Length: 295
Ligand code: SAH
Image: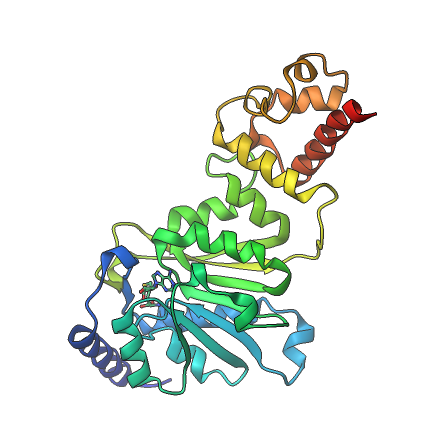
């Protein structure tokens, strides 16, 4: 264990450097973490979820950090010999800071949401990590979903409420579109809560660290595009029975005269009551019902 005094000095250096060089910008969701032990704990989340197979090989694990800011988390990732790190940061001031203090970092300046991941990583897998910009966290996770077969682990810090939503189970108020879509392909762990006072400036909300580990399911047993549409359409009117919210997907007549008992039962439910498996079943039932037209 290093003496506390040394740790405090290091933290102080970071804080003073930050104050001199980078102004926190609200529109970029900038809340810089000031607690090094929290930063270290977040950095450790990326390799733990990895399968034993990966841990045993000598190959480094590629990790992409989103929004490194002033590198509080980055420094721990860089120190880890098992990690090959790339980072993407949108803020020019932070980029200048990182280039000065961490010249060894492979840093891309730009917007993660517009980043061409196929160009950055033409093949193979990579983990995603960050103390994410909270204002775009849902968009970040939708993009992770687009690359789910290449992202075995996605972990980091987000707004506590969002973390609870992602990890929540059916029947829970917080259960929503992202919970279903992410849980279809990832096991989601709520790891720990982080209080506002370890940030500068402190955010208005509490934060939490999560880890999503790709599950074994390669494909859903249904039309995946239709599944996504059904989940989104149903949750857009989450208080309504699905016979009302899914009208655009199944003709009125089929809704009312539906002879399939299971489908009729599903249609009387609200979306927050259905598990991923049940949404898969519902998707297949709706697809069958629609196909009857064609036959
Ligand atoms: N990881 C740092 C900073 C967290 S704040 C820390 O823990 O202290 C969020 C960071 O994401 C900021 O640095 C912000 O500039 C960056 N950011 C915001 N939107 C982004 C985007 N679209 N693409 C990449 N980085 C972004």
